[in-house]
Picture (tube, rainbow, N blue to C red):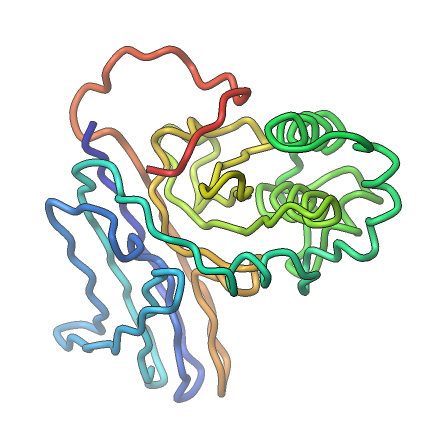
Amino acid sequence: MPRRVTAELDLDLGASVDLIFQITAAQGVPLTSEQLTFSRGDRVYTPTEIVDQSGSRLHRLAGEPGPLSVRYEAVVSGASPTVHTSDLETISYLRPSRYCQSDEVFAQARRQFRGLTGAELIAAVSSFVASSVTYTPGLSLGTDSAVTTLMTGQGVCRDYAHVVIALLRAMDMPARYAACYAPGLEPMDFHAVAEAYLDGAWYVIDATRLSDRRSLVRIATGRDAADCAFLSYHGGYVGLERMYVDAVFDGTPDATVPDDHEALVQIG
């Protein structure tokens, strides 16, 4: 089923700033149409597109002081092809990272999930995080990590994903972070999920249980949220005056069985 994704950002730049956006569908996502614009009044700016090793598309722009409007809309026409994962990638997704300190949760993971491997391990970690963390918009900080979330028991999608990733890595299963558009998500926003590597494929885990994993549209992939921020900047002040994100089925969605989050599913 085609999906239409939208992102609108209105920024106030306090100085000349190096802006880096990750808001477009990733490389390889099949698109019927796509439009990305950066503008101030009648003036339109052209960014530089950089594609990283995982297929995330970064758009870099030298912003000038004053307002900047960012608009993105795309129609996704089908499922993305499977991309080969290198040995180097799987190694990097086994290591601790900024927000996923698998070394610090090692003892807990080994006690709690002892003897579990493969699909059973993925299901157990997903169920544990879903039941032990409360979805709490507005209380999570951008600096919160998997360890913080395990201590507080609250967070948003990025926090759920970080805990899942840290626990899986502690159990020697490669795990990574994915930023996505999620049709039907409530509350609507950029969404974050985890992916686990099993038998040569990546399977998506949404411990928030808020999305239908089968409809997700990949934006960016990385070790954790630090690699997948929708906006990062260097050199000056940037104010986010307004943000609007939407993802819908482009037409009437087919009647399907709801995602029970138990089956192994890949981001399409």
